[in-house]
Length: 293
Image 1: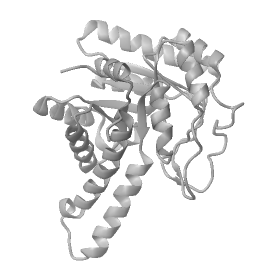
Image 2: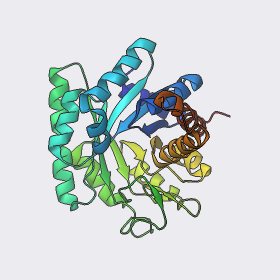
Image 3: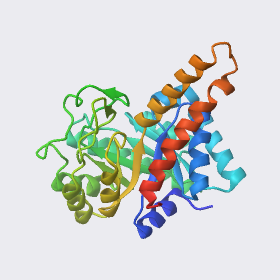
């Protein structure tokens, strides 16, 4: 079975991106896996701190690893949006394929310092064990909630003068030695209620990609127009995060199931439509990311 690092390198060669989807329930895991398997593409399951607390830090790893082993399939697990070294260490020790230190609200120097600490620990563990955990760093605030929005999150870096600069990106990557890097290029966490989210800045993305040698990740993929993904993968994006669109599809389908089946009490029956709704969203996104018609 290939590793996540190998899957990313294959995506780079093909000029495509790997889909990263956030979960907190087992039905979502199966929806995402079924979709990826039907298209024969690798996929990443994401669990940020609150999802990990809900599902279980080690339990989430065991579930994904069991699916990977049983089906011999490249499905990976990422500890998304982790806000302290202690919790990054927890994820690395639990065997996650990757982990993100989210230090975007910190001063640049502090973000670099803690991100490097995370990278150093991951490399130290990898030398002792066969398991490698990739470390992602982030630079630039794009909001913090995966929900439907009435306005752009306060302080989000979407204006041209607020985006991650090439200079800061090069410094951050050089001084931290991260495996993956997520710059602020115009996307926001969550999705706008009134329509599409702001477009990502392809020019800035290309400039950052050309100035350093690390794999780039897009956060805040929900709510973007389709051409953002096709242009973004062409400019070097290798992983794309989707969360809010899954939550919305899951919730709407559950409401419909409860409305149409007021006497039903079996969760697996009520959640079947939610699983199907999530699978539809994931399939559409994976086709976009992988250039599948």
